[in-house]
Picture 1 (tube, one colour):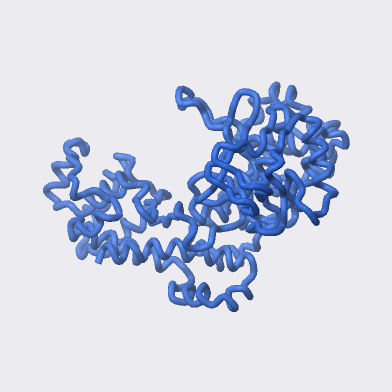
Picture 2 (cartoon, one colour):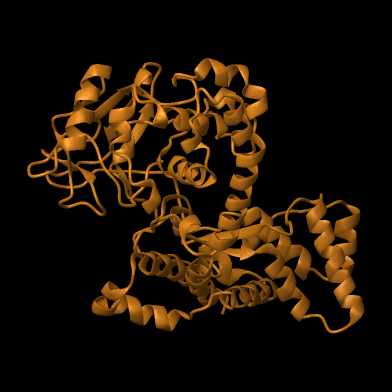
Length: 449
């Protein structure tokens, strides 16, 4: 993963940079066999935030930027308490799956002779992480209302607290010789969760391993230097002996090298990493329409109790088909509906005549012959049945009402560079998240006209 929030960076050192932490890291790299290309450097100049990796010379696609031997990775399997973590694996099970790595970090951080100390010296100041989970609740709600982030953060905070007191703290207290009192602290644990969320990598499963549990997260020194862009120019490759960062596009001399953390909407970027891509750069951005909002929009069109009861019957049927849920959302991108099957079935069932619904329900939805004209590609939305378009439009209008600010005010802010520059970092990032989502929703309004 890795993050664009303010932090220390690593790799070759550019001219005029503070050499202290980087020099120690480069020395460590040589000891552990972490190979850095002479064509890359770390610099504050020409990067999107803080330190970033920059090309000293032009780089061609396929060129190796650096290789990290597996022995240099920091994980539950490579840390100095790996044996204990393995023996206690059953007791360390959690919903996140991150507890063993977090315990490894808590132990290594306070171990004076930890092999990863030079790597830790490049980490950001934990008390200055910009994830919304560290914002005051009032600020989080005010700036990110309607985006889905406050709700995601509340779930995170509840989960972190529960995980800490039910699993992590009892484990540390059972091994006081391995964990000093200063690391037995909920706030430090919350900071390390954010760090793992932003900096760790997860090795993908092989195709034949799809049924297996996901791989546990890893800390990958040097790889967490690279910032993220949807239009990235480097990619991390996994091989049996090492992890290799390889250029995927030509990178001219002096240009920043970007990795990708995956196809991430701006709300996911700010939630997990503490930043958003400025509009319109994030081609992977999405907007959510809560599933229950579509039900609410459909209820607006009912006039008598019998119609409302029938609508709830339709909804229950969609739940039975596992097309909708009380906490689910339909996800809309710039060029596609990412939940096309679910949204198409929902519009179909909520809009079909009562007699047709009875027949469809009796067949358990098996008579669903998907027609080309019902396809929910963005270009096809204007060709949908009028009833589908109206329900979709009403759902978008209800969704837009959940934001605290309107699109026009945000357009004015973004178009005035002087005023935009006076906003705080959090205000700027939140604005980019809200604006991108609203632009996608307004595109839907135009298409459903």
